[in-house]
Image (cartoon, rainbow, N blue to C red; front, side, top):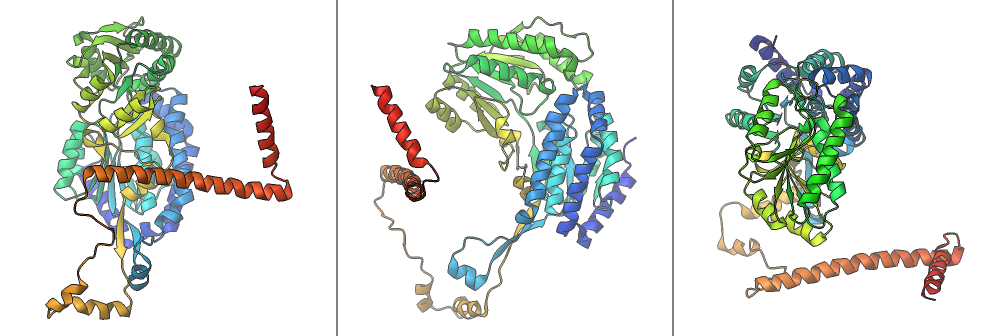
Length: 529
């Protein structure tokens, strides 16, 4: 039974009243709620794992690795940094402006936020935005996915037990109920899910001019070039397709393989796909429901490619689709008509430039994976494409970097979170000026009656040495000189530090630096001899 419209109205009014009361603005309240989140996870880890297994047949290792651990790591970062993040900041406006206007930037909560979670990671992708909203001081309405019923029901039970029910509430519903929910005005909507549903979310938010964060997906490609470590690429791509059965917005959707390595890559991918499925099938996550299983199976049947697997389609378990490499695929194949969101991986033969062109003809992906040992080639791919994030010679790594923003671009979404970026997402940066009395005397110069004599005080003089005849090539030369100057400055700083330590070592002998340098010189001399 979903939450009724009457109950939603009551919840909505409660949250609005709580936020207006100022309760959620108090830093102590925010810290208390974040700590309560920790205990919610600590006390109920077993129940969370059980619910995820019931919904997705997910192994406990994956649930801890991809959900519980991710939440706890982010949670500790929020608790460590909340005082720093929420403190008033002084803008870099210059000494005179700062003294006369005394400006500050204050991060203030946006208000009542709606967070709509997905079914593929139904705990972490609901709780991580929640902790960001709490840290920012918002009141929050949570809407977990109705597809993962056991997890939804567990969250409905646990959230009011641990968190302040006047400020954080959970409602349930399907598509119709969520549509009616979004007819209300919120101060921010954070949605994780598909592009199709995101269009409806954005349209509903636009009616109230409500800002949104859309964490979507896209057909994330991997480019395996002629210089790639084929064994590493094959194994890592197999792993990310095994993880949650490829039902990850950041999973490799398809692979562009250079003709020089295509045959070897397909052979090694097939080996690892078969090995992972053969050894880990019992612990492999299932496709979430029959609708998605039938969709994936239908795409496989329509594909003109060759399925490279030795596993049965059903795998002995309901909704279990084996890891499948599909070779001889081109960009017109049905497998590339949509985001797969499953354990199928098409391989397209393409040079690096052909891969770049194909990527740029598709919607912007959430992630791009590049396998290459050629730094210039890697930089060419990065500078010639646009994606939410990039990992070079690996998968998922960019998402795990502390303090780095996570988010999409174009059809893969907009807005960021993780760490401080999540806090900023739910905050309004409010500039506050406190001008001294002196400023009032100066500001009288711009008040009526106007005079042409006063224009001389308004003119902005060239303090940068701008030249009218300056060309693009002149700018490029200056840019190169500036880069060399910065590099020289860094080396100079390192040299000064090294010399300072060496002098200190010369006087005290405690660091042993000179002895190590002497030994190194002796080793080099012996090697030459």
